[in-house]
Amino acid sequence: EKAGHRHFMAKEIHEQPQTLSDVLAAYLDGDRVAPPVDHDFAAADRVVMVACGTANFACSVAKYWFEGLARMPVDVDIASEYRYREGPVSPASTALFVSQSGETADTLAALRYARGKAAAIVSVVNVTTSSIARESDVALPILAGVEVGVASTKAFVNQLAVLLCLAIRAGVQRGVIDSEREAALVAGLRRLPGLMSQAMAIETRCEELASRLAEASDVLFLGRGLMFPMAHEGALKLKEISYIHAEAYASGELKHGPIALVDRTLPVVVLAPTDALFDKTVSNMQEVMAREGQVLLVTDSEGAARASEGVWQTLVMPAIDPLMAPILYAVPAQLLAYHTAVHKGTDVDQPRNLAKSVTVE
Ligand code: F6R
Image (cartoon, rainbow, N blue to C red; front, side, top):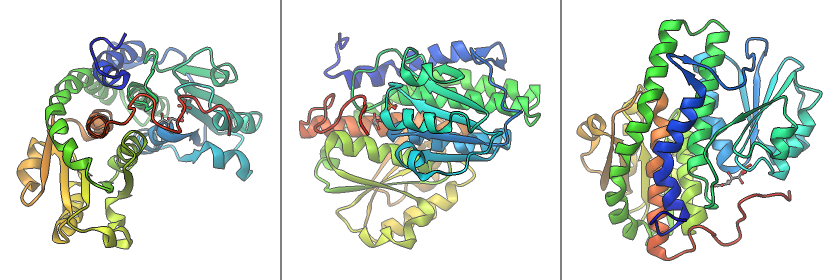
């Protein structure tokens, strides 16, 4: 059932080019984005996205997409905070809930809080028969198939893919994206599964680096823009399966506190595809190196050529449209955590204290 893999998590990581291509087939039609159920974002004044854990990081990535591609204001909240804060809900807003299981107690309670206050309840779920799907006006499937590993991998990637499709659709509906731009974006989406297969080539390097990461007591993840929530995802994956303390920071926040932690024992994973913010991230990375922090730079070949000097290790990813990079950069986040956990001998698929579906608050 693990299809020759040692763990479900490994199987699910390697399934991603296929599961990604499955969800894109359901959300794309020729050179258009065509979700299986069409929600009208043009009528909404804002989007409020609520979720827990990994799903919440998918929402944080989607905030950049909705703001940039559809010029829509977006709030992202953690379900356990949103449900009790009694925040005002705009009657013209779309409330969007993201959940793999569709049964997370806090996310469901947050949905019930928004019901009757927001104009529409939209959910992005893997389990389409779940409570969250049933209680939504529109339930959009992520089509990742059954995810067994407690640490979410393929569901996270497909949540991102669906949210990016929705952001593009919203941009089209709101007149921000014309048909030429839509076709170019769809062409980029269609290249993703192939790029993801190529990205799996970094696995051998991740395995080599795992022995060193496994010795660390703390690991810092840095990123800017779309890579900031991805840094959170990398830190979460590492802590939940390898039990190593990991933290994420926005690169630009480094000098406002966490740089005090940097010394030669601290591995610092820098997620930096070459994008408009690359040079800014590199200058933050150099501040880490000046304090002897061990930088593991995850970038593309152009980034490696421009910034590898003095870094401890470089992982070279395929080049990609920076807008879509989060979907690809989920892979190094997962593989670094996975191989570090395997090296430490922890229970990768069933980490201590964790449950696949958190049905109590
Ligand atoms: C992390 C992880 C959790 C879940 C969170 C929400 O790898 O799996 O953080 O993402 O418990 O679960 P769902 O998506 O089922 O609501």
